[in-house]
Length: 133
Image 1 (cartoon, rainbow, N blue to C red):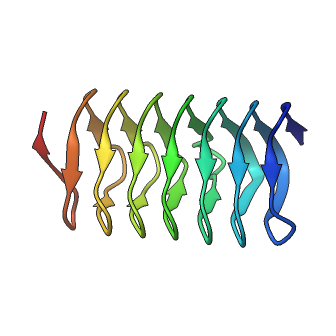
Image 2: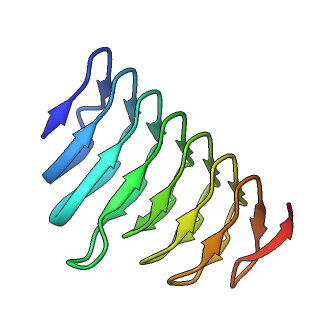
């Protein structure tokens, strides 16, 4: 595990495997970050809030860009999230998803595997659909 400068990791957070966390990040209570099957990269100034799960598959690493907020209870599984995105509370992003820069995934949304979200999009619903660009 690599951790940048001025990064906070809560004592109750669980981080295993091939994980790189940037500078000035926050990993909050009961977050689980499992880089056991592939790599997880979290960019500078990003935060993974309470009770989130970040997990990979052998085919899909996780790359979280700079300035990303992963809301309470969200699940990111084998996806790429570009800079300046918001991943809403209790949302789920599945394998192979690419969330473009500046996008918002609404609370409780489920983004199905392989979906490409263009930059500056708003995604909501189950399954997640682009409702605004």
